Length: 203
Image (cartoon, rainbow, N blue to C red; front, side):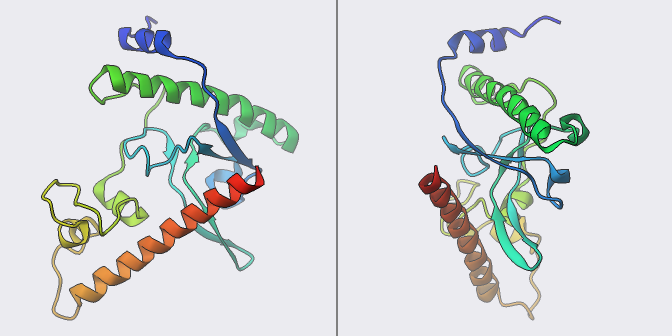
């Protein structure tokens, strides 16, 4: 198979890169238990790359009643069985696949520069997040300008329609609804910042 011209050009432009990745052994109820890889320096998440074709969205979960926050992680493996069953072997296999994923990420970033913002991912791609998915995940700040470039705050423009509240009944207070969503988003952002801060202090 011939290598696309833009990918060839991107490979020639690649220089030396260093990434700091935190790898967790994995959670039974998250991504089939595969080791979780979090890129924190430089940060690689949907907040930085909303159009990224290969990330797992983060979220809040609980194990034995204990709440925890998992940020966006690297989507480096589709088939968890390919990592093996031995814990050490799984880690070694994961590190190899993460390295390949990072090379794909660098190529994607370079092709974005070469192709007017449209990057090429080597391998299967996931579709970009829809406005509803981004709104539900809290990637848009209600106080920021709306995604539609109207000049209005997101909370005063597309936020409610993105979340599926296109038609509000009289029994729903628009003001209270916006305040509740904004508070939830702020909590998620604080969890995100706290997680990255803890990772940096411990590394």
